[in-house]
Image 1 (tube, one colour):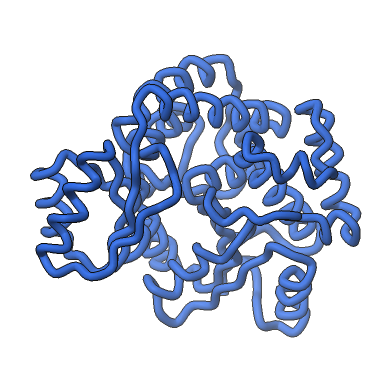
Image 2 (cartoon, helix red, strand yellow):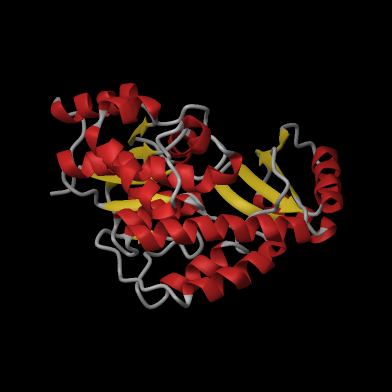
Length: 306
């Protein structure tokens, strides 16, 4: 049996995130201290961790702390996959970027995206049970863009206010009943993020990277990151759609049949269940869920690639 780690993106962070782990898990606590020193902010404090300006950094910090516990107790996973921001968690844990460098890039990337959203404000909607032909047609007719192919039955569209409003009307006219507006003011993974992409390209030119020690699958290309293309793929990630569903299928084809989601919420666990059959899926975002996975491992319910 092979196991894959999934690293959460933004959208499911919660107040007090990680406080129970900080209290009870020494390796998590050390991770918080290490990153606090790097970024000159005390992420042991709830008001810092919960600060909306720190959301991206807080999520990656939280994820890295959990992964450090697992790395100390168990064997390496066979593969890693992150959703959007979660790719940085995966790349840092797989040593493609040093911790200090990676966290500083995450912080800068968040700022670039905020700048891009001010220049090109946008909206996003999650569309359920629309066919690929319907998605293609609505984008061609309205100027909206596919942003996230999350599962075979869930696609997120993004674009300007007008294009997303028109796309919503078009889809409803097509009989699509479930369309969920997302609480964002930016259209991530669309051309509206071009300004951020350009800034990130300049920033990454200064960064030293290596090939990951564990395969990390790109949302953008659906192929493993490597040293030669890593920077360019991260630049493209900001303006190209994520293809998480396809990545899951690629990983499953390599006989990975157990997934552990690391980070806030369990959205990726849900994507696994809606995309694949016959696989196990767990998530860790608290001491309670960490101990559930520990128990499963100790009982032989999960096994790592050997």
